[in-house]
Image 1 (cartoon, rainbow, N blue to C red):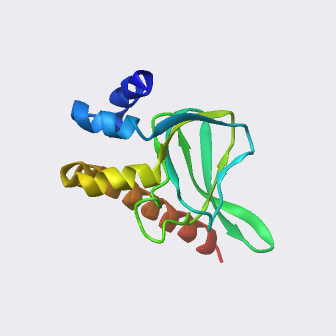
Image 2: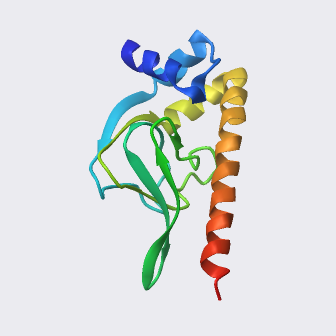
Length: 152
């Protein structure tokens, strides 16, 4: 686990975390890998994990019946993937597909939510860091919708 803790410590999302808070996150973490074109998660599935992208690229997509999915953002190394684990009912709100071999650290959501509930200072720190992620994704989705549907 020490290796994951070290990797998380160097990630910008966790910059400034205390050693104790890093240990809490690392205790819920594991390495994961996704091949190109493999879905990391699909809309409606349980949001039981979030991901720190170490290598590769992931497209965030909105499925449209009868049409090709709309890609509203592509994430890469150093970015956070997935914020639906924070908001009940903890279901993914879009699809995430690896567009290249992608290596991530997956953080177990139930494990982390339990630690956030038990230590409110830690929970508050996590929420302060996830709110900007959620806001950026909302903004990217808005711009993509304007681009797709604004051309009439």
